[in-house]
Length: 424
Image (cartoon, rainbow, N blue to C red; front, side, top):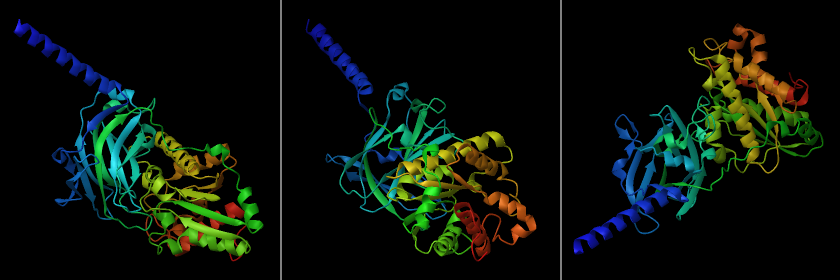
């Protein structure tokens, strides 16, 4: 009799445990990792030197969490600690992830990376480190950006489902900032979980609803303050021309001040060498949030040009979709809608003379569909010069020399004003 009673109690307890586990999966959160076993994480290395140091820190309830200290050379795009997780169909019922963070008090940002299909697809989201007290970060699937335009958005009809996620990592991606520095960061993480009810913070303003360029020109003509935000890769940053002070955005601002001497023009260059439309979206909050621009200029494409074995039309469609999404997300973090000038990306000096043609044509077509967006056709202008003359404006295969940057500035100046610079 005592045996049957004991068996009955055991069975009831077992059912209760199963019910509790099922409820955990059906509930608002589902714990993935309590972050108290750092031996489950694999650290990226450079020549056997780890780029991430892992330790245990006291978590918000007195239990150990994972402490990440991240340092990477400027040339490295990733410095991550990652671990495998076992995919579960139940994950499709959740809207995103939550975890607790204790930052280092700096103005830097860290990253969380998700991968699926053994690394064939990956997405990255960012979180700030300025808070030194434990606080919860909640990220919807829409807050994760595909690492290239070739990958679909996570959790969408075309994209990979959350239940296919098989690796998660913390650290930093795109390791240098707008000053081309690679700051060391540190932070603690606790209780990584799937969560319901979270919505994406990546607000978008449809590109067709951005104000026309004429609104900025009126401000320039009447002497009102105008802030110009320039976005792009190393070409816009000024690599091989001497940096920001010699890049076309700085020359453009000088030309506009000459043309509109009463205007108060503020230039903010947030271009980063090596950037792509996806990389720009990844670091949107770090590099753009807080800037209120009247005009944004964008040129990207060189670092994501079609490969020789790719379907150029398909890759171009993805590039253009990501470019538009980037512009819309940039506008979405601002309190007022900016005017937009898109530059048709410039060709390479020799090897890539034709590599950006499809992208450039796609940008021109965007201008035809959205008349409110001005196109500065830098590609066509450089092509019209001919390859020999163009080579004299280039410091290397990709980057204009100072004279080439001046020509770039004049192209954008004409797009904005409808006139050539007075000193041209």
